[in-house]
Amino acid sequence: MIWYPYEQMKTMKEPYRILDAEGVHLYTKDQKLIDSISSWWCMIHGYKHPELTAAIKEQADRFCHVMLGGLTHEPVEKLSDKLQEFLPGDLDYCFFSDSGSVAVEVSLKMALQYNTNQGRKRPLVLALEHAYHGDTFKAMEVGDDEDYHFAFDKKEGVVHIPTEIPALEDAFELYHDRLNCFIVEPLLQGAGGMRMYDISFLKRARELCNQYDVLLIFDEVATGFGRTGNRFVADLVLPDILVLGKALTGGYIGHAVTVANHKVFDAFYSNDDRLALMHGPTFMGNPLACAVALKGIEIFERDNYMSKIRHIEQISRQEMENFSDPRIKEVRIMGGCTCVEVHDPKTLEGFQQFAYERGVFCRPFLNYMYSMVPYVISDEELIQIFDVMKDWFH
Image: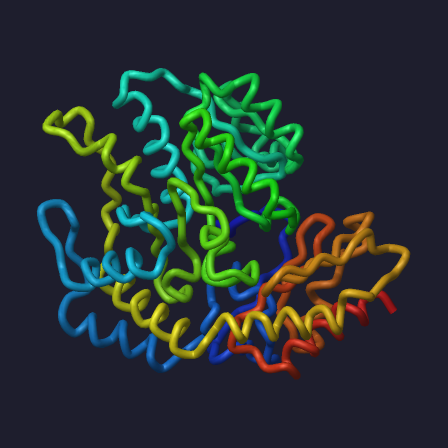
């Protein structure tokens, strides 16, 4: 029996069984669905993209996997080189892993050991209220979702603050000598409620991290590759460590990467084995994942995806920005994300099936109805999603 994610198995509704997928569409036995959320935000190129499937097949004809312990291979070397070129600043050192949660764990290990390697005891992490960074233990700890993780006691090693500059400054004043890092989902907080905030907060965070030698970590697992309307928020404010996943491989094979700058890497680079980063996921640098990631980045650049994302945002604003209803608290739009927050979560009960019957797959949660569409979506398909959202309130 399958144990499904984020579900109470006793009361969950029957999941929709997918028989095929192509472009932005999912196919069940009786319905053709526009995937409005890109299978948890990763399928930016859509399904069955011929170049991506060809990249996987071509690599599979050579070999599907070798470990990176004592071995290396061309796809991982090329991907590391490409990321070094593609990413801003001196984010040059790539540590690969098999999921976003694990990549976040690696970033937090780097930050703590960065300090201990230099003889400093800095056990605290600064994080944001309403944060979500994954479901592994340390990722849960820096997240702020006690409703779902009540069974796992919060440790005393994390301080959570709102996205307000006075609160940020107060936290650094109080804790700077104990902080090893400040981890954020930059500009757009995903599973914590599609919350959006201003770049000025991140600019001030960068200044304070510089002042007190606290590492700044951007978790761009969800926001990277254009979702906020920027290639990466790291293009606007440069972190010390950047975490990427989801769209890294276009969703075709699970993979992620934690990218560190020279300052972080140099704290581990030593003749002393004890100062090494002792971590090694079995599937890190998987050749199939690296091959499809390389092809995906090529398509992202060649097909001018940033122009596509700006157009998606333009249509989203035209269709949704002025939409209102007494049950709606706020409509928020940023890049390739649109969120309708309602006052009462009961307002959204039944919406998923309502959308299904009208040819759209969605997955609202709590008070949030949202879209994070594949970037290859047409205007007509995007408008169909928004029409279904608006029709729910009529």
